[in-house]
Length: 206
Image (cartoon, rainbow, N blue to C red):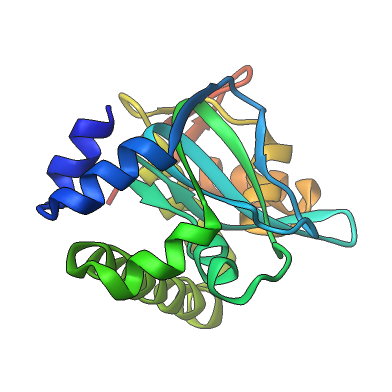
């Protein structure tokens, strides 16, 4: 899998390839495993080689989704902590079984100055995360929660079915279960979806 990472990131510097092989290690994690915890110092940069990780902040017994990490992605907030030797401000939990590349932070900053391909990787990570967060902010500021909820359900549906509880949806959208339940009933009344037992069927994704 490390060879896939090197290939996809177009890491052509032989010295960096050798350093990655010598300095990093690969671990596997099951669903619900924490790979990053809030208020802990970042000692290792974790890059998802395969799987899915949910990054979120927790505040007043509520969880606010920041973003998901998919194949060949890393947490921008953790990446920035590598340059500043500071504590994490987020949690990251495995959503789908993951294979993780672990790189000690002492290498991350140095590689950014030594190797063009690594600098490109970190720059792209920051840029993509910035664009995502700006889009998230725009949605929060201008899109009603009912519309955000429906768009989110459509994005998560597999064969028009979403298998998430009302509490999960509330947690991921930063609101309460009661609000989600009320909005889902309104969407069902408008024939946008059907509420089943532990699943939601999307009827109209337009």
